[in-house]
Image (tube, rainbow, N blue to C red):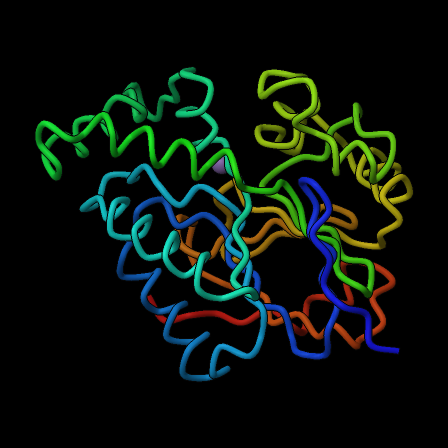
Length: 259
Ligand SMILES: [Mn+2]
């Protein structure tokens, strides 16, 4: 039976028969973004769905391509129905007005300065339009073969899939929202991952958010670094028809890019 893709509140249930490409934190790295776009467009002819799991913006020290990335993903999001984007904590900072810092640098403020440079007097309108766009973004993907994909997390405040679907109901500063965007290993343990997976009816989860050497396994969670990483850069070519019983089953689907 071919399960169609469904959008339900802040959750996308991905069905269909093509592989799903999973790409994590770009952080304004235009070079890497173009590599992933090329893979999607040339290797997969745009037939496969692709998901970017948030933190598109805020450079980590290199030339900041945040605006170029945003302009492209926003137009692709409108044009292609299999081009998925999830919210990250760095986009969230512009929705809530709560600044994010990296190495003592206020990245939310740096983003505003970048918009001033690029757009002059129109920078505030541009920021508002980006913020409206960020507010449209869902929080998670669940695949038909039971893989849960989000920017970060899990959160103990999620009791079931409905709590993901309706996660924005209590505003962007609700604990479930905060933890699904900010939690790292340590604020949850392996048993929390398994409990979360039971609650959302999945067998493995993929997150970005924490820079690792390509990927790292934490029980049934894979932390994936596609651009901003602690070494290699990897994406997942997720076979939606494979049986996924745990995170180990996803490892053969990890692909590395040369960068
Ligand atoms: Mn993040």
